[in-house]
Length: 200
Picture 1: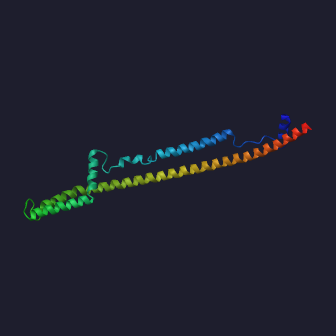
Picture 2: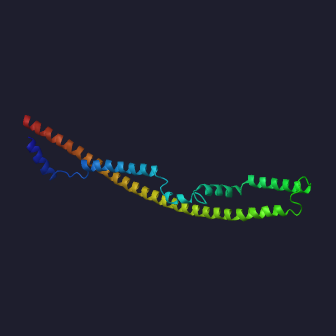
């Protein structure tokens, strides 16, 4: 009886319907989903990888002890604390010398002018160097951000393509499921007809 059903099936359909997405492709479909998840988790873990080549620019004067102190000093020049402290020192300096409490720098305050000149001689180059290195850092990190955005765009395109591929595979599976359901119903009707014919 099975031989007759098998013969009828091949006569009716001409051949066994070809599975476009069999078990191996389903496994591949699941594997693709896992690979995409692994790619996402790897990119999340390594989100600063584009800034690694520019770590040497983190300090304006270098990375040793003296360089860090020099950068801190250069940054201190632009703070309100420095301006207030300098103003207070100048006022006290002039007040002490004008009122002759301590008469170490009489008018026209030559020593005070020398102190300002010395401060300017060191402060200006340090501030200019800090600004130059800051510009280099800004440019480098802007380049790193641009490359990061490009990598994110490429990863998004890969995810979109994988999603489209997986959607097509799901549609194929659903269509084949519908075909097999119809084929099963048809076979069940044929079996019922054969059983009824044999009983009669």
